[in-house]
Image (cartoon, rainbow, N blue to C red; front, side, top):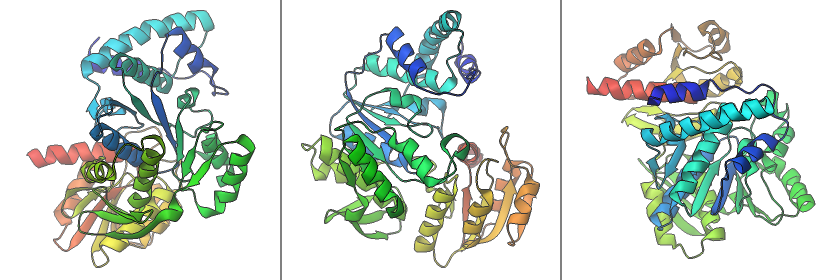
Length: 416
């Protein structure tokens, strides 16, 4: 197999029916004799999972731990999903493990008449790699929801639920309470759960924690004095001052979850190490400055867009804002654009190659702001950058898939 051939096979593995329990992934872990002899920090939530994972990955690596990281989706390349001490899994390892899983998957189908789908195979790839690498700790990000997410087949030493917003309502349910119960499914008896969930949902979280017998730690109440400098997020957590290189008001809350996780599991790690790591952390596509006046942000739902708008208002109150935007059909696009309208002076609407992509015509009734439409996202980016003036700010947002594609295009464009 070549690398792309291996990935093509992986992406083609589609589940035959809706997942109703975790029996298949648990069976696969047992059949492959996968051992997880390391600590696991499991992260769920609507937004901020990747940032919290990145903070933890950087802190623990700097403290001398051998850290595995599993995240979804990716921005730079598929290999970004599986890391050890901030190094992506190599193409050669991807090929080797996919070849092994292909044989295993074919045998599994013969025995059980069932397909192991893409996400479960990717998780199995990661677990095989982490076992080989003999890691000390795994920072594990949920794919979708929590309760029935394949990652929930693993026991954990700490659970983190960042926040709750409307997402994947078809799979998780139409209300925030329904979504919250899915996220809470990652918890375990006697295992601490950290959260920054909205106050309206705290009674539900508290009652669930009491019913299922685990300690619930509400981190947000100890986060204070948030402000943004030109390139840092500053805040206090439990009356100690911190700075983060990840930018945005919401990053104070994400960083505080990571800080509290370290305090819970690794009391030997000093605050000096934590602070150094917070200034070294990098997470592509999260309020990432490509140039001084061009920002990429992977906000892909209402909750994320609102956080983006809050940061833009705080950091750039006098800038004229232009936005390159597209989103997938299953998102609350009307609400996303309503929020963006509060900062946007002009839109460049576009679309991407994805079966869930939104057509340009669907955006137009949802805003009263001036706009141009581009079937080709490269043309939209080129025109937006050509039009951009020194006193203006360009935001590229709306979809993680789009941000990944746009980031690669802009990086290539810079080389010309």
